Length: 173
Image (tube, rainbow, N blue to C red; front, side, top):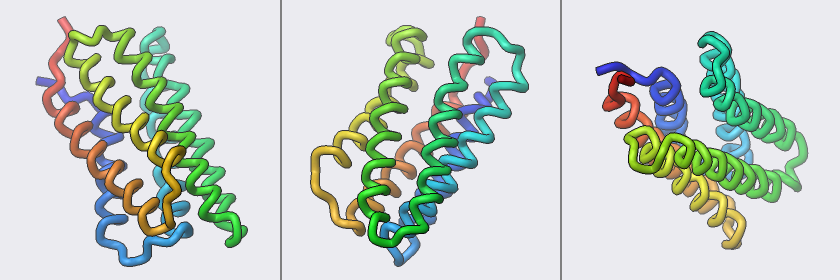
């Protein structure tokens, strides 16, 4: 059994920040933007580094868009902290964008990997989490406490799922 480093890294970042949001009493938009900013920047830099350190084959390069998206969302989240009046709309828009775009990309990766393979199924579950998060933030009018709570729940669930997927990944034949 081998551990998938990208999934393990994503699991660690997601679960750690999900636990932070869960046990933090402040559920304002500033907390949500700070967590989203840390999530995006750490995920973007980490996934980019892991992708670029592998040999530059097509499958490695196809991971790069998620790293760039995460980095951009993280930077925009930290920039949005500056204006207190627009923090909640910015948080809602950024989380919705992250969920929908990353979910769509993971759905593409699930199809590319084949829905019947274990890797494809793992991508599909991640895609469903992301798409549901994006649709929730897009379709339902959330207050700041609910929005930050749902984002924290997404991070924790994704972290658990990715941790299990990383630990149970098999060596390719």
